[in-house]
Amino acid sequence: MIELFPLQRSEFQHQFGISAMPAHVPIFRTIDCHGDKVLLKRELLSGAHRDHYLVQSPSDRPGFQTDTDHRSFDDPPNRRLNRFVTWAIERSEHLSEDSRSPHGDIEPFDAYPPLEWLYRQTQEDIVFLSPEPPFVVTGGCVCFPSGWSLPNKVGQPLLEVHDGVPGFAEQLWKKTSGLMSRLKIDRSVWRSNWGIRPSPDLDQSLRRTASVQSQRDQINKGNAMRHCYFRVEFQTLTKLDEIGIVFTIRTTQCPLASLTTEQLTCLRDNLRSCPEATLRYKGIAPMLDAICTGIERQLNASPR
Image (cartoon, rainbow, N blue to C red; front, side, top):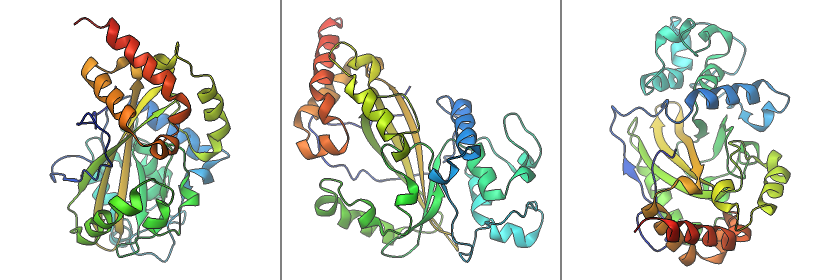
């Protein structure tokens, strides 16, 4: 399933699409195969390639702990150092300070440094940025990217992070920079992003480029609806005192064949009007004919 369908118009446009997020709405959710995603994150973070997914924030940044100290939240200095973890628990629908003990599929709190413990209990990817322009990426944990890797972005200003995104500098950067500068402490905003990938694999980091390309090469008019996945990222931004800006990404996806008739119609029209540069950037261009043909066949077969 997908959490939401972000296309609202029948013609493609670069979407800014920022909305305020009510404080009572959890940022860290348990939807869409949550347990499977958490287990996959733990596998990646425990494996030989963990440095492809996890970048520790600098130890001199206030609000973070990067050593192996496993003290609990009960230690006042540790509560201050792990302000973000405390905030994340408050904005979660499945974590609590009782999670210091085994709780369902929650690992014991003292098994890992607090920040890594949080990464291992949530399906959301998390990126930290500096609180002021130029909004530099400082660290985080991203296990489910769509064609990029966090280590390549750390140290880059936000505009440089989006270098190569068609239309971003010209159409979206001014709005994005203005929004980031106006963020108020602990007032979250959200947006969504979409794509089509030739694989159900959640981990599509640069380490997996060859595998994803091989799967893309096998897409044809007969299998596109079953083998291509509509992928949606639910993204939030929150500015936290002494922490910086927190960017979360929750990825949901489904085969194209699972979309409704209305969703497929909207997607088809967006693909037809999408600029070539954007189709190439999203990795859709090589599959476009197969996807559009598959959509038309399914629409024609649907009851009128």
